[in-house]
Length: 569
Image 1 (cartoon, rainbow, N blue to C red):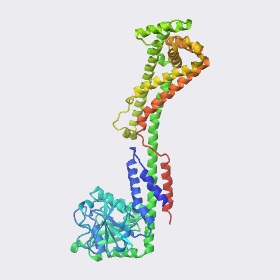
Image 2: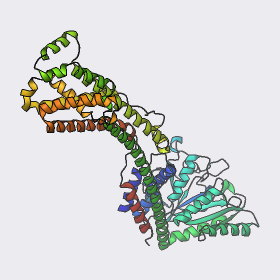
Image 3: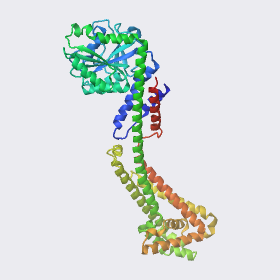
């Protein structure tokens, strides 16, 4: 019982949201398996001694309701030419056995409506229309029903009503035995045979009623039907013949027309051991079928997890490549082109830099002049140029990663369904501002690194006319000055001036300290870029379904355990 409860909980938690081939079918299978656990398997395990539930099913117009009326000897269900006739399922039981069905023991999803035989009208005639939906079940106590067996008149399996077809399948899945009604001219129809094959796979006891057999055709038609049953693994099914005949008053068959079927039901009802065997046989078959369903759902779940993992890897790879390209751009000298190179040359070439190295003059004069002219210090211009250039690199690589991820996902049906009509091929709103803020924070951290490192070297640092900002600009250039990305004259300019900055830093802090500060700054920048792009890739990853990596394996193990349980005697 604990295993069945675990399986039920597992099936109810299953979600297969990705648009993969077979996903919709697997979702239906999971839902149907959970319903059958509630409707039949769990109730039967809890009450092996409960009356058998015989469900009367079949095609439209096969005569199910007429047959049920004949079995009890008076009208209890609607029979007529209007389809669907069985608008609502009616469960007939012996008066002493009402307690088995009045609660939610079986078919807990259907509400109960108590019918009565006190009037000449059919049960349910006084029930308000809103209560006669296909979500309820009419219970009717009738002494004509033998104790030990209840009879349920189900809707047509091929009804024009989708709801009726669904309900018919649900009721048949909750049956201990099927009384399947077909006619002499429709016994080979595809829909009934699909359900009969399902019965064979579950080892359900089946009685087939061949209705409206014309005079003289019994031997030929019944032989052909018996051959079909044998070929499809239903050779053990009981076969009953109802000849074509005119109906009596109130649309009733003559009692003798269904006497063999009624006698068979009465014998089964009177045999407690036989009823127990039927219940166990059907239950074991249902559990084995459940094992196959659970295995199929586990396979579908594995496919979902594999597809989600592939989509995740696509996004992570695209953004990981972007981070590597950004890191490469910050190490190979590429950022020292253009505006950054010009501002660095301004800083170094105006004479401020070299004057500061040669003599202790000019610091206050130059700063005071810049203040009155309203110009930012040259070192600050270097910082601003680096911020602009680095931001451009980050934005470009983030957009490239987004476009690549969007293309990869749209080439996959699962990814395409997750994206829908949303365009994620560019950077997210506000990403540029976040990148700029991250760069400024990195620069601020670099300045703090210089202050911390220079605390013991205030004598040397005091006479530097460009102060912390100048040292910070020099350190940023050193961080970006691995000149593999530069060519020709650029190497001489950027590389040469970077060496000047490095020499200054080494004079102030020492060679080891400069190497350490540059490595720390590079690592900090790499971490910040990785964090930025990790956050940016979330716009894709948040669309992936949450997955329990152990769920598929747990279902597979449960399927094997169910198979063993279903094989028990």
